[in-house]
Image (cartoon, rainbow, N blue to C red; front, side):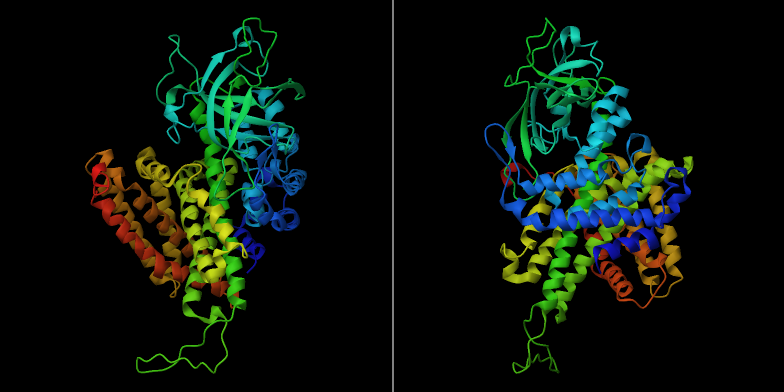
Length: 616
């Protein structure tokens, strides 16, 4: 099956996205307009992205002393993507958008992630602009967000710092009012920022005429000290180049300096940077006589002290985007190894009897896809990648439901997204990475060389278990907050949907064993959740949060596969047979793994947590 035919099945047969056109926001759309968007993105990805995937891996970004240099192909790909209108696809018509359902937007972006994930498709820029549309002032929306949606400017998110990493409560970047200009700048309360930010994707480049940084920083108290913890964090718009209220460049470079490029294992087509704010390399003198020009100029977004909450608006979108990127890298490896297995002759059929294996060397070699173990590895990849794609599109549909559904359905979608987002980010980043490993294995020694693309897919995908929150962070978020929030309402809603799927599947004889297995697994996860918290001690409950995350993720993917196979009518096509086999594989080979994961969770096993460091 091609990616397009897989998307068509999930969108139109399983998720029934055409029904979204019954809602006022999407009433101008039809399957014809949805298909046109998919066609356009598939064409751009095929022509502007895929041919240059190896190029952007080998020609890493470099700094010539004045600017960061990227291959010309990256510039052309960005221009084509911006010209397609996809940066503003989900926005209102009034600001140049298409009012496209997020489900279709997410599906369209899969083509770019599969063709060349590190060339980028604007995920951070769109997330940046969406955050400003939700929390910025009217002028911040007009000046910054709209220019990002048009592709004229790009955006970043600046959270981590060298000394703090993922511990955002320990950020030390300071923001102090900019003297007399503080309260009178029409773009918002004006501050001077000083600090360092690390791991900033697309933090410096020449693809757009300006880069809009969203920066977390702390405003000192009256005693000059920073407020400890996350409650003291505020959010600021810090443009690379200063602009006026009409969105025109002022010709003044803000004091945001590139301190270095990170040289990565993969995802080399996107710059990843260390940025210094207010180090004095580009001092900004203004008409403010009380300012010495020290510090990068930033404009407060929303209210002081609420920056982390605003940033999570962007981070949650980014986490679904990371999951989708991981999925499509897995899918790229699957397609490559499938093609290789169909054409690579090696070995001969196994024959014989009475516990004796015989191979006839006189027979012709068979293609490796005829070997059972190769089929096992291909089917594992298919179950991981197509299952993950279904999950990501399901989450995208929940986003549309949250924004356009009835009050009740929108609230349910919100709660379901709270519970599913850690899975949508983490599960594909682990198991579609495993799919990439299996793709290398199918290629044998060739897979470990640069003669074939599968080693690059693995290197690119290895990042996804780390960025936008590591597995450990996602796991603590799931077990420590999401399954408990609002008295467990989100978890209960998800359990109810799993029960509904099981009931639907029970009436189909071939799916009945899967329905029973799903129900059993759900009960096991519920019981493990209760046991983890039975002592009331967070240290004990969260000691095995990652095994819990893995088990919960496998439960979710089993549910997705059962719903896909139970919801869609049977036919005699190879595609349907493939989906049935992928679901069967997942239930037979993968779902049983959860018992081992949940055992340490239920027992609140402290083997790892209590081991003194000297023992290592």
